[in-house]
Length: 443
Image (cartoon, rainbow, N blue to C red; front, side, top):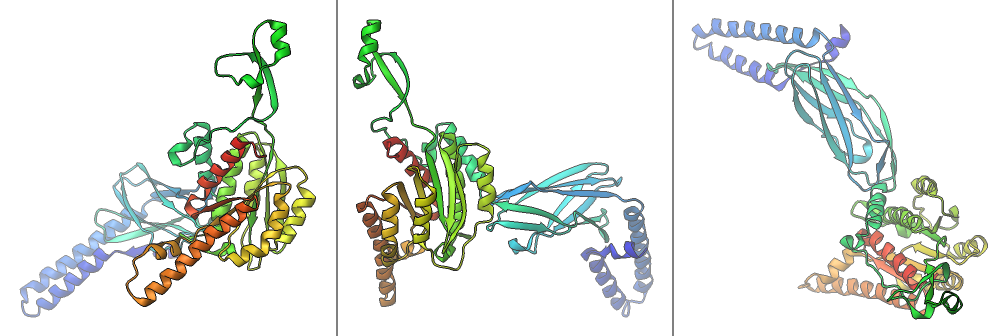
């Protein structure tokens, strides 16, 4: 009985009717003949409420379920499915309040849906997480009312459900599909003309028009009495590492995400592409010391290991120690490798402090330093300035923008590959650089 009372709620319609009856009682002071009619209306209201109570509480008339995916993809829209099953014989109006995880900071979730008697219905909504970690959904509250709409009965389902938010595997699958489908140019990924070729021998075949005459195998040609050429294939199983700086410089927010989240999403998508291309992939994260180190492997299942490792990577409020990184690279990465270093430099002096370590790494490996444009400063530098303070702000913004370009030039002068990119274009530009390096045979 107590549980039934706790689940009973009066609707706004009931209070509107009650207010109207109160006004009629007041008016009946001047019109006594109205007094009896109002009491009849009160009795009708009581009868209707008893009828609606019997309809709602005669059976357990509603079942609902919140269906969550196994994991959410960070920074992407993720679908949540709600299934409703109406066991009542009448059309039920169901008001749904879902208690979303605290990370979304959304306390006004509300949906209303009508379900025919003895029928099922479903609807879905989407959520966009911007932090990795565990997200706990609370109660799924459903308030059922009849066509009268005077009272509601509350049902509570799925009292606690937890789902983990992982780096953007949606983005990873998106680029994986496009790479396999050979339509990379649709999203800005370029096809690079191959310069030269690698020296990994594949087979000897008969010469056809268009083959490189420099690859003619003269011994085999003499033996078969027709032109034969050596055919080469792309060199595979080359080690490729994603190195993620987790220091305080990667804490900078952009479009709801931190720079490190953009780097993690990009590293995951890039690792998937590299595995599809037949290379070995590994991962390193560091700040003042080395965090995780995954040696390069070519197993397709290794991507799950990388995903689980990236799930726990986060920024530290510390300065990065590139000397520690250089010593670990020298000690643990013994074969010539492609190293994609995700970091950020806001001032040229910070780059100068790290240049000796970057040069030491680039002597043995192909190092690509990936850092970010400051989009807000870029907008400020392009805005029209009319007052002295605005001119001052614009000048400072342009100076910072010039410093970024100066950093790119200084790195390139020292033989270090660079990618200066906006956060939203990070994945595209990173994969472009990887394809360019592969095409030029720089590994």
